[in-house]
Image (cartoon, rainbow, N blue to C red; front, side, top):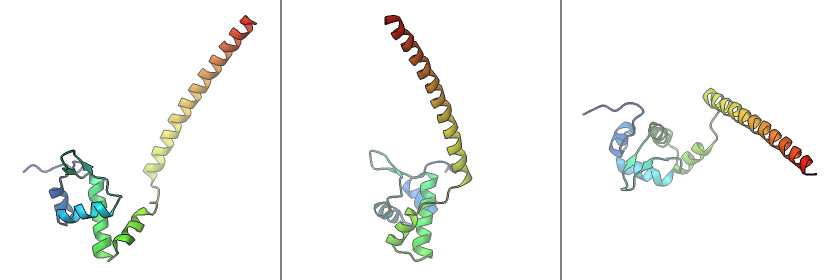
Length: 124
């Protein structure tokens, strides 16, 4: 059998092995935790991304190791996560792009306004 890369999607069977829980448990967790956003194909086949696997492992640890209830785990997962440097960097880059785009649009709008004023003066 070919070993999948770390970024490859997993089937429910593969996810089950990685998480260490039976597939019926993963299906049950889907109904209880809205944070699980796996990909479901039209035929009902499930595909788990690496972040889905990490979330399932986190849920498993909260339930099994920490002894939290499903409600408590949902509350923990709903709490805002601390912002990391990658998020800040991505946000700064996006802001720069938007600023440049807005600046360019503003210049174009000013040029259009000048031309419209010239036309208005010519017509008057």
